[in-house]
Length: 415
Image (cartoon, rainbow, N blue to C red; front, side, top):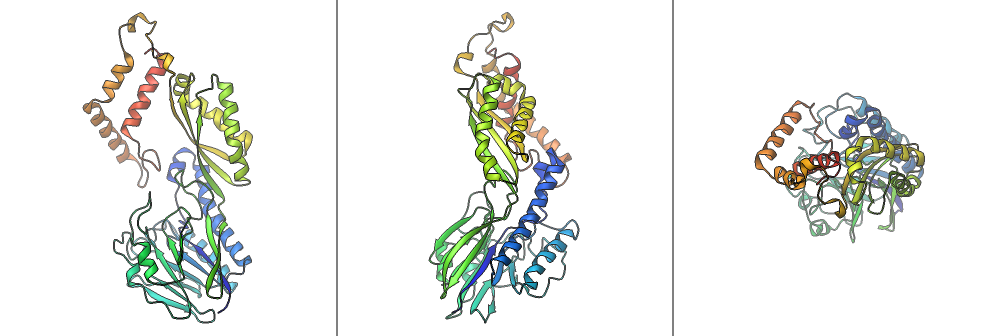
């Protein structure tokens, strides 16, 4: 049996709007959106240079219905580079680009092969003795186990299953085409090229069951390096499966304990030190940072009361260390030191436990209900696809906690 290499990619999400970033800075959001395309271009280039025999895309080429044809034209242009290099491409539709979701289309170049939405089917590469089995999503939500109906393997060939699935459940991912590792093993294929889960994972090696992860992180929930898989087959068996890192922008979610920091100068120094490894890792990539300040600190009141100014200082520090690290959010999760919790010097508040009053108020059902209603009113006025807080819905308890901290901070810590 011939030796060859193939590419396994998934979850390109071309056209992702980066809503959370667009509300803060439309220019940065546009650069992150461009990074998704740049990552795909880089993947095609490096895969051709690696002399792959064929490429697999296991669903979610697009993020959803096209706003215009530009994203379809871009994809067509890039996969045409594969075809001109003599490399066929095999792809399935996932939940984001299911047949019922992406209704616009452009004619794909000859040599790009899709799979039926009605049932799993097999496509063959006789010269390599490779059989690829796959099925596309007809609709966004596919609740049934598709894997159990995949075709039998072709005897004596290298068999690959292509499936967009949550497998037996992965945190943060909707349950689509659920199946078990045993379901996959029972098909006796040599390699399962999975999609849908955005975190890279080699689930098993006998048989090989792999999530390549997405090509480009889209939010702070998708941190770290991103890319595809380059798989080498020798004598009918997987000889190696290595990551091909191609992301052009990267997200980071960092925590900094400020318990021992007593002034703003110390905070700036600590932030610089915390960011140094991230700056080295990014190299020439664009970076989006969420920085969480934690611990019981004497700086707590200032961090809360002067949040916007301090966030600007942190952004400046980011640019001192790397020209393209952008502060997505500064999260203040600190508490005042225990010593602050004493009686106030203000005669008007001497007999008032402000903290206790605020805690009691925030627990009142009427106040929570009023805040819920207010958030619903605001949400209803936002454009379609935009949510309060961007990628993450706000928690009412967190909002009340922030309001309490802000009141206490502006009262000079009089609690």
